[in-house]
Amino acid sequence: MSFNESSRNETPANVSLSPSSSVSQSLEYKTVSVFLVLLVCGVGIVGNVMVVLVVLTTRHMRTPTNCYLVSLAVADLTVLVAAGLPNVSDSLTGTWIFGHAGCLGITYLQYLGINVSSCSITAFTVERYIAICHPIRAQAVCTVSRAKRILAGLWSCTCLYCMLWLFLVDIQVSQAGLLQCGYRVKRELYLPIYLFDFTIFYVLPLLLAIVLYALIARILYLRSGDRCGCGTGVDRCETGVGQVTKMLAVVVVLFALLWMPYRTLVLINSFLPAPYLDAWVLLFCRTCIYANSAINPLIYNLMSQKFRSAFRQLYRCRRTEGLLRTLSVVQPAVSATEGQTEGQTDGQTEGQTDGQTEGQTEDRLMDRLMNRLRDRLMDRLMDRLRTD
Image 1 (cartoon, rainbow, N blue to C red):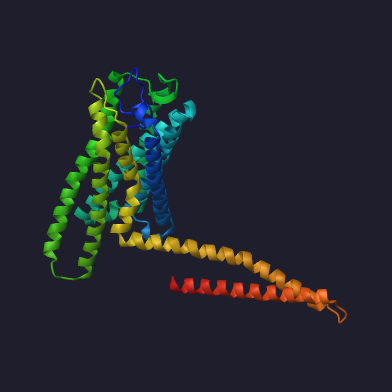
Image 2 (cartoon, helix red, strand yellow):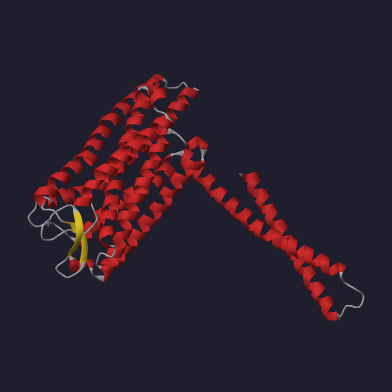
């Protein structure tokens, strides 16, 4: 899948779908598309950055599962930046503005983010299966260090695989004389590559997820029947494991549903002599893809108490740091004002003029004002620290 312009001569029905020019150049389409893409991508970028910060800065959040979620968040960030934001410039200008190097690099990053997100979902699905269905083995297998090694291997292999797309795209000139970043290969070469990519990074991960989550659901159901009414600490632990598993299952389901419109449309168009390129349908399909990369942090916040608490703690830490920075700025100013006031007081004599007296009064008022400001900031800071 790519979001670049397609070549109308050699590959009229390849995966890179382009809306009809008459509709895509209309003011209504540009306004709606730019608004939707900026909204979804903005929310997604902020949310995924928070996921990464929460896991990296909170010790108890550094679990094997969360390592895979960080990988998924980074992959989603790559998709949002490399696919969503160039779509905005394309809607506004109607031409490719990033040059030949940008065409190669952005296409590469698009596929890298998409494929790594699929691999990350598969990885945490397998990790959940081992942790729940084989708990004894999981103690040695499901570790943070092993998760990091697995992710390093996944990213390395995917980086090498995605280099294939560097040889399939190039800058082209449309019939209207506009630059486009599109595929330069014929359908006979492109279609097998796309079908391979579609199978490896969409069909097989979903089939594996269906099988593994069915086995997980069976194990959890049997355990809930055995522990019914016990109310022990082990039972509560099983409940927490079930909640995490449900959250990850929702992520997988949303991945399947939100990718299905675009994948289906591209697959159909790959076999049609005249591709279906309705601009509004394509905008819907692309928005679903961006939403898939943006919605996961919302799912974590809604379904995980640990993530909610970690998000709140991150927000409080940022506010506390802001208060400390403000205090660090005010404190030297207050000290300087106090020193200046003392120096003026020591140098005063009985022969000062009325103008000097007025200056002393202003200095005293400023001194009192700064002291009050400092005291209020200190009180607010202490209240915030006691609350945390």
